[in-house]
Length: 375
Image (cartoon, rainbow, N blue to C red):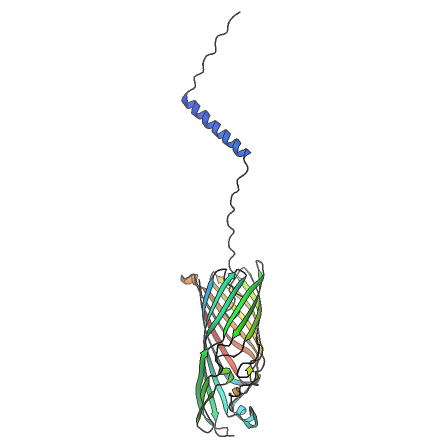
């Protein structure tokens, strides 16, 4: 029987061994990866939704700061009133003096008729976002009113004796409000607000007027010239707002209801304010708005026995009425001027309808702006 030759040894080079080891490692790694459970990979953070376009300056409760953010606003406002209305009819100063009884003395006629009132106020507002759905707003400030008063000579004459240039100034009433978003989707949002006004403004400022006999006297200023209302007022409101692409719009209501008479013995009539607006964002950081504002307010209830005088503004029945105004405005983001934390808002309006309990001075115009810093 023939014996077979022993097997010849196989010599493998180092290079071949290295290549084989590498291939084996790859195969083992792929097999292990196939058998191992899939690793969880963190999803990218979702994009933060861009804030909605800003509402007009004169609408409260539409804009809310983000959670943990503070917005500090300085808001100067100016207004002018002149021309006396009785209902919707414009009446002359002579007609007022000849036909309107002095409050408390129906047989005597008015001797002093206001000609012009200019108003300037400075408000500081702080808005803080507690959550993305809840924020608080507090306001306080100062107001100055200047009056031009025409005095007629003697007890019955319609001869103009002269003008008084007087006025008042002081702190306004302090307010604190909360805003709560009850609904939001990519287009629409609905927000409720509830506030309270506190009587930090004075109700006993005085002024100096020219009297029909040519003398001057200092007395308590008329109701409309007092910096404050002197009452605790509750202020409820609701806002609906929406936006698509560059367009935005909204509706709002806010009321102001005094809870009781002030220490002087009177309270202002209930105030109801309605707004409707539309806006267009031309570029990022620039939005223009058009707003229709309607207000209605009742007469003053009660009276201050220290407010006297043969003038229409001394009569608590000659307050309140209805007014419709048209407003135009713009909001400019600070990014356009290199200040991301700054926003500038502007708005001005004129009345197109006024029906006043009067005789009473009518509004000519009002304008304001806001400088806002986000912290």
